[in-house]
Image 1 (cartoon, rainbow, N blue to C red):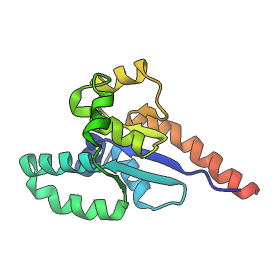
Image 2: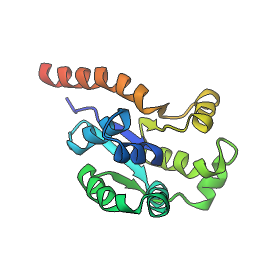
Image 3: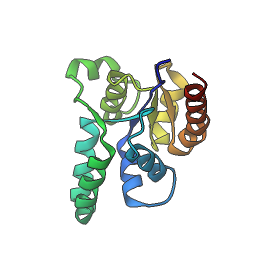
Image 4: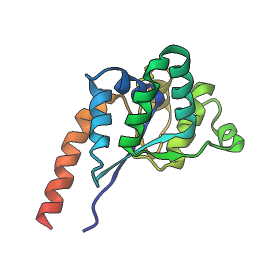
Length: 158
């Protein structure tokens, strides 16, 4: 039986939070992804990486080497910058600044969009039906552990 791959798209705020603090759900997610398992694929967008780097340069330049080291350990699939047409097709669904994140998650065929942005993405979650679930980092950890156990037990029973 083919192994189920859980594809997760991380918003910039989750990656930054996980880098800045060694505690909490964002860091746990980054740590899980750094294990390079065969059943979880981490993704983020080129747009997100630009946003992260801009924020680090502006607010915490000393953290840039840590960011570069951690990003290489995680081995994200980087989803290319959405086209202007793709962005225009989704304008109005969430805050304009978050549309490239939404489109990148769609283009990556994510199963989960993990974000700490409650203000914009909670509204999006309530009003639209996407191919992925929108969860905050804690919700994802609570949802993923049973899924990992299920996936692993299925692979042992085959």
